[in-house]
Image (cartoon, rainbow, N blue to C red; front, side):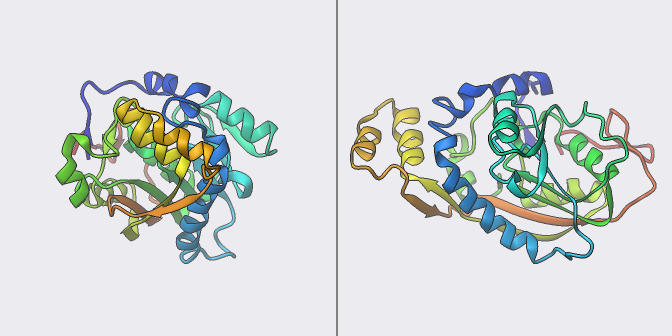
Length: 268
């Protein structure tokens, strides 16, 4: 796992995710891309369902639920108030605006936890995995998507890699480092492969031409032609979908990430 220095606090990172982050900053219009986002979620769910036992895996929890597009079948938590308000008030979902590390889950337990494109945004991702582990039963599943820092595309592009954009991305993982971190907290990786994704032409034109080059010609052309919502499937083999199963151990994790008196080393 690689991190950017200095590491921002969770509060610093949370401040990034205002309503403008989802409109005209990181995304041109996150809400307008709901259909495309849900295409990605359905694809991820097809993989996740291959490991789910319906009689055993009944309670699903998502960390980083944003506007709740995945949560129409689940419940979740996110630090963006605007996103959570949309999930609750517009979609009628069970979503909470909070930092998971500060949020009291009481005795709640979950059978499946999802972190879709979230873990790279966290100041201390190991502590989030540790807290989830404390609230998951034996055989519970955790599913994560994030960029693969060891992929060929990342190694060739280096600082120009498409997923290298601080400050919102604070950590970068390879499949090996993700596997090691999950193993520390009792999760055995069942599946770890590169996954593709859908993007709308609007989103692509905004990201490539407006954000990177400050030129809106292609973006305006896509809009005038009425093809903004057209989805395009891409796979640069630099994004990992990882599914793992947890064994419930009799341990607790303190605020320094310690388990059984062994300190989890940072930036490993």
